[in-house]
Length: 194
Image (cartoon, rainbow, N blue to C red; front, top):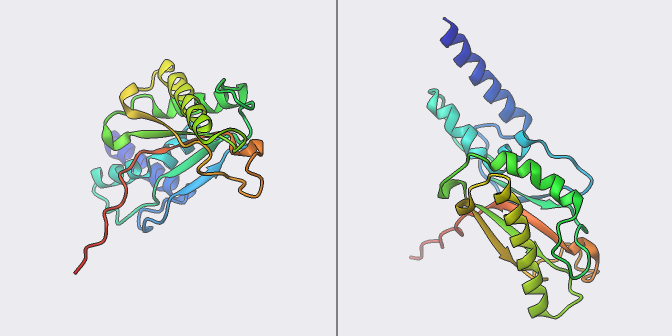
C-alpha cells in the first residue's frame, strides 16, 4: 500500500509540476524560447524543467501514462550586462545564477542531456576580437560549472561574438554582453523534397 501511495503521489507531483511549468504532457513542441534572467532568481527545479522538459515526459511514460508531446527546452540568458567591457571575468551576479545551473545539471550525463553555453559580446570591438572574447566568456562559465561538479563532457562552450545582439538598435550596449545556456540539440533535419 505504501508503494502504491508513493507512486500516486509521485505522479500527482509530476503532473502538478508540469502544469505549473506550462509543460502539459499533451502540449505540442513549439520554437525555442530564450528567457532573460536579468533581475530574476531561477530555482533549480525551474532550470531542470526548462532545460529538460522531456525528462518529466519520460517519467510519466515510465509510470504508464502517455506523453503526446511537451514544451521544447528553453534557453536562459544569464544576466544581461553582466560582463565588463573586454572582460571574461565572471561577475558575482553571473556566478550566483551559474550555481543554480550547476545544481540542476549535476548528475545529468549523456548526449541527450548535452548543454550549450554561448558567450556573447557587444559590437564595440573587431569581429575577430569579439569572437575570441565571447569564446573566453563561454569557457569561463563552463569551467565554473565543471568546478561545481557538472560532467565536463556534457558542456559545450561556443563563442558567437556579436552575431546575435539582444539590442540591435544599440549594438555597443552592455546588454549584448552575456552568456546563454540551453540544450545542445542537433539542428532540425531538412524537409524531404519530392
